[in-house]
Amino acid sequence: WPEDDYHTYRYAYAEEFLQVMTALWEKGRASYSGKFFALDDCMSYPTPKRPLEIVCAGQSDAALEFTSRYADIGFVGRMHDTPEALRKLNDKLKGMAKARGRTVGAYALINVIAEATDAKAQARQDYYLRHSDPVAIAEWMRASGRDPTRNLEGLDLLRWTFMGFPFITASYAAVAERIDAIAATGVAGVCLMFPDYENDLRAFIDEVMPRLRCRS
Image 1 (cartoon, one colour):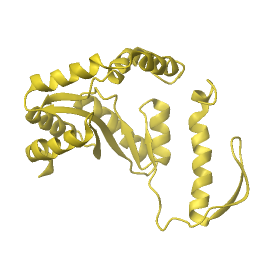
Image 2 (cartoon, rainbow, N blue to C red):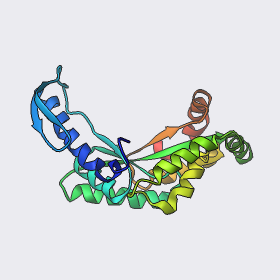
Image 3 (cartoon, helix red, strand yellow):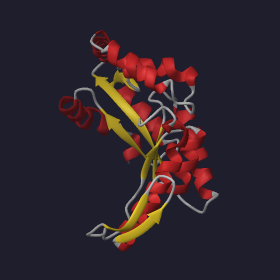
């Protein structure tokens, strides 16, 4: 970040940025004078043919407030949340948006290690943990600790997350059951992440998707 204090005003900064960009997207040129941005007859062409969706991420009160006011999609979850925890976050975001006459969809972040058996999936997780980068993780934790909006009690959970602990580590059938449970919370969608993208994506398509009840 530009400096440590950036964490305390980043949503005000983002609000001004969106005001500037929205004016440029809609009209192609704009002047603006604010706390963070100053434009004198700035031009941006071509303009979009349709309104652009705004995607935000975060689940602090400040993040949800900003998302409910300005975004169309909000990524929520700490990658370890239970379906019930995701349901509460989704309901909270939808309620905040509804109060402003808006509709915002919550998307869950899902990092997946799926194998034929739970044991094989766990073995892969253990492999990633043994080959994690503790120096990089420690630096990320140090930087995150400067963010006053972050729940510091959750930093240890984040440490494990960034060491490779995925959201779902299980057999194909168990992964499908967990995704079905998440879908039942009413979230608008999920963002899938795979540590071995090409092979994991193919396995997900072939082995997990046919088992998903939420697709029917």
